[in-house]
Image 1 (cartoon, rainbow, N blue to C red):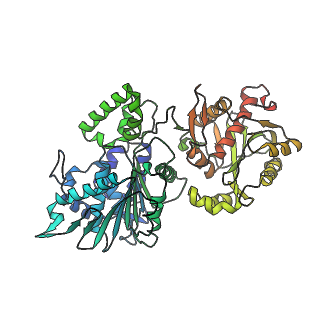
Image 2 (spheres, rainbow, N blue to C red; image 1 turned 180 degrees about the vertical axis):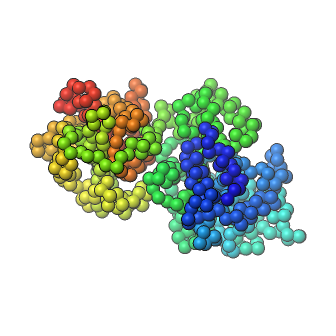
Image 3 (cartoon, rainbow, N blue to C red; image 1 turned 90 degrees about the vertical axis):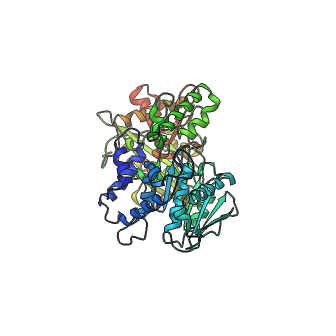
Length: 559
């Protein structure tokens, strides 16, 4: 079905100004529009209804005050409204496809007004006695959404009133649509006021500023008995990755990358694909600010802000986070490698028989994962790899809920082993390692480990006749294998058998640089578990010492 949102996708999807994750979401949704999905479709009736309402609503202020919203709506807004509100099941057109809708977008892209418009649309389309909530970090932000709704309604007489009677009752703490007794209530963050709500729809605004995910989870918990639930999660970037919004963004990326199946998610992630050259690369600004492609005044203002941030370092953090959707943390944190590049190296199977292999360990405690990785090198220089994770057997459900990963599925596929109770049984890990030669038909040349939590295991492996090598987890030591692994993947000189859990670990991995520009995977700054990548890098260290440097380094303790 062709519509304004579809036209926007056609216009943008093949341009560099469209970020790659937005393109992925566009491709999936356009397939539905084209009738290629057997379960879902875009409802022409709902689209017509959307258009009709936007023609009745009026812009309350600004350069286009008094004009219909239909004429003022930007491309990304058309896509967001149409996809989230008009994509439905074929067998039940009243049931929407998407339940969680995430929008990552920079300031000055009409974010607040987008939220306000969504609530007005819901007022006029949702069933009687519906309840809507907006959640924001503080009262000021909550009032901004309420004021935007109020101003738009009061500027739209065809919607706001019927004859001499007002259709809406606007109070300080609520807005009610009288014909259906539907109510909107703005909330500011609280640890005690969120539970017990029954939202048909909610919007969490500036989620990057929320201290925890409590507000979002409280809203979701209140929707358990709602047939057509809907939740919007919207924010810019913030200076730290340790916030609920980054958790949601990370999850949505895994969905778009095909690592997690969740057809109830829709996300528009307007963040730049490459960030290093933000000072002179216009694409950084374009990809984070879709409205700038349509409104020249906004584009010119962004360039002025960029020039100021270049000249004044104290303004840099605010500019990069709020106007470029780049997390600015001094020396910075970056994605280790695009998971799509990793997936391009996947092969159907690897024949390990007769190969000399190197093992890398990442041992941990309690709910953290432990991992064993194995690498070898083929005759053509391709690095062959396999990795397996170990988790506490009694924490599977807990980890599934917290990490939003189906560990039981990965246990079934052999990518993960559950052992022990509340903590991992190192004995099971040691038994697995000692059984590798027989299981795979290989010869273990050396085993690399981090001293932390591993001394006992290393001693047992040493007593069993294995060559164990302590690898100090310092940036100067880890930089060469970290860089080499990345280069091998990018060159297509890396191969692994299907292992979705390993792909998720790569997706989670974040890197940083030390003062000497040594690159290393930073566990604390990564989003989720990265144990499989860490153990893989330890294995790569040993392989690099032997095959690249040729100095017999695998027999030397690195301390």
